[in-house]
Length: 229
Length: 229
DNA sequence: CGCCGGTTTGACCACCATCAACTCGGGTGG
DNA sequence: CCACCCGAGTTGATGGTGGTCAAACCGGCG
Image 1 (cartoon, rainbow over the protein chains, first blue to last red):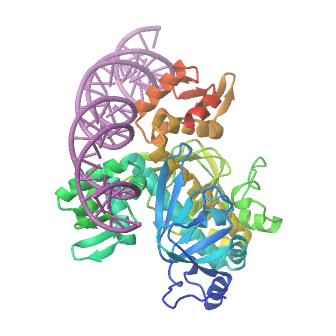
Image 2: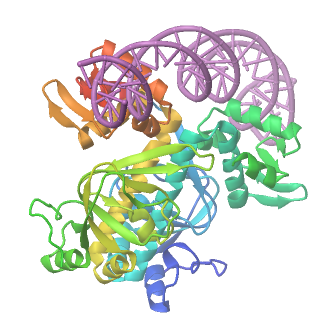
Image 3: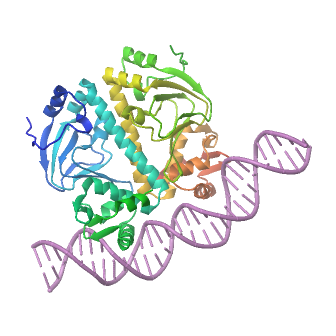
C-alpha cells in the first residue's frame, strides 16, 4: 500500500483525468510510491519497458543519444507528467533515457499491471491514448520547428516552455535556474551551447532577459513570444 | 455495408492486429469504404478531427505548414497505415494536412464511432495505443536526427525509408518515382531542394543512385545505410 | 588558494540557403 | 509538325548562420 502525500494532486491531467472513484483507486492501489535522488536514472534508452512513472514532485530529464554519440534533450518532465508512456504502452524499448534532475517522488507501475488496468478500464485507456497522442503532437511540432524555424525562434520557444514549466517567479520576471543549464537549452534547441550563449547575451543587451550562472531570468516574455513566431 | 476488395489485408498491423473475429467485424462494419482522386485532401491542419482513415490502396502525403508559411512533409502513408490517428484518438485538431498523392481507397470511421469502439473493445484500444506510440517514436527519432545528424545522413535515411515504402523494383535497383519529387525529399529532410539536388548529383557520380525526372533509383542501399549512420 | 564546471567571447571557416540562369521533357495549341 | 510554355531539376556564385576551436572568465567549494 502506498502512502502518498496529501499535497499530491493525482486527479488532474494525464492518466487520472475524469475517472470515477473506483477506477482512480484501482490505479492508485496498483502503483508504488518511490523517492529517488538527483542523478539517478529511471531507465536507459534501449531498455525493455518494465515500468511506467508519474512524477509527483521533482524533475526528470528525458534525453536521447543518437548513433554518432551526440546527446539531444527531448524535454523535462515535471509533477503530474507520465514518464515512459510511449515505450510502456507500445511495449517497445524506451526511446530515451530518463534521469532525475532533482530529487523526485514518483508513482510507479509495472508494465504488465498498467497494461492490465488499461485493458480493464476503458477510461484509463482513453487517458493513456490522449497522453501518448500529446507526446506525438509535441514531437511533430518540434520536427517542423527544427526544419523551418531559425535558431533564435527555436530558442525563444524553448525558453518560454522552460519558464512555464520549471520557472519560479522572481521580482524581475520568471527565473529558470538549476538544474537547467545552457547545455540543456542547447540540446533542446538543436544547437551548440556556444550559440545559446551568444543569443542569450544579445537578448540581455536588449533587456529581454537577465543572465547569471545556471540562471536565466525572462524579463519580457512577450518579446520572446514574438521572436518565436 | 462496405464492399472491400479481396486483396485488402486488414488483419495485419495497426488497428486490426490480433483481434478475434467478432471484434474485427465490428470494426469493419463501422467503417465506410471510399475512393478519392489524386490531389484531394482528407483533412486540413487545424480542422476538428471528425474522421479516421486507413489507407487501403494508394498513397497519402502528410504535411504541415509552420507559422511562417514554410512547408514540412512529415511522411507518406501507404496501404495499411492509419491517417489521422493522433488527432482523432486525442480529440484535438489535426496537427497536419493529409492529401492523396495517388488515387486512394480508404476505410473511414467517424470520430465518435471509433472512440466508442475503443471504449468497447480493449484490444482495439491496445492497438490504437501502439499505433500512436509508434508515431510518437518516429517523431522522436526525427527530432534527434534533425538536431544531431548532417544533411547527407538525413537525406540517406529519407531515401531508404522512401525506397522501402514507395519503391518499386527495377533492373538496376529500387526506384522512387512519381508522386515523390525532389521537393518532397527536401521537405522531409529539412533542407532546400537545391541542396537535395546537389547531394543526389554527387551520389550519382559515385554510382550510389541513378537520377531522372521525378525518379531516383537506389543502386547501392548499403552505401546509403552507411552514410545514414 | 586553486581547482572545477559552467559560461562567455573572439577568430575562423564549413555548410547550406538564396538567387539567378540554364537545361530538359512533356504537353498544348496554332 | 513546330513553337511555345510550364514545371521539375541542375548548376554556379555569393553571403550568412552557426559550428569549431582556443582562450579567458567566474562563482563555488574543498
